[in-house]
Length: 119
Image 1 (cartoon, rainbow, N blue to C red):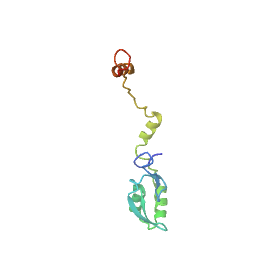
Image 2 (image 1 turned 90 degrees about the horizontal axis):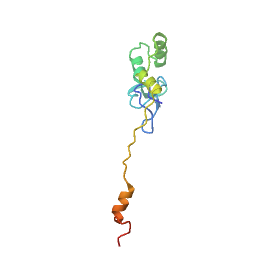
Image 3 (image 1 turned 180 degrees about the vertical axis):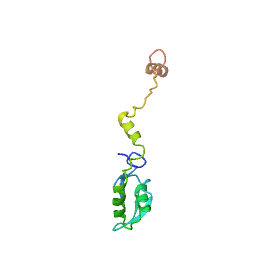
Image 4 (image 1 turned 60 degrees about the vertical axis):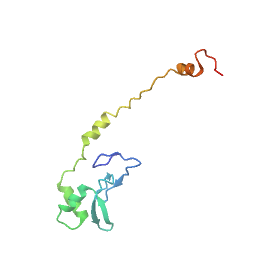
């Protein structure tokens, strides 16, 4: 899964958090705007929800989102083409290079050229 805003892949270190305004999954970095949500208190919300709050004229947050959603086209996630390309062309496996050493040469150098052990 990826963050709907910055496309960061969720992992052990990048936690998936739902935006309290819209419910989409985001990372903590993208939930950077604070807003007082009724019955929940002050919560961090995504930029899209914050913009809806700032450009609306009604006082109720839930009514504002419903009103704007009826008149606006849905916004596509940032870099959706990057997501689609990664699905069509998965990342290639890394190239692994091995250093070839001749173990017989190491053995001869350690025990002498005659093959017998030096005591």
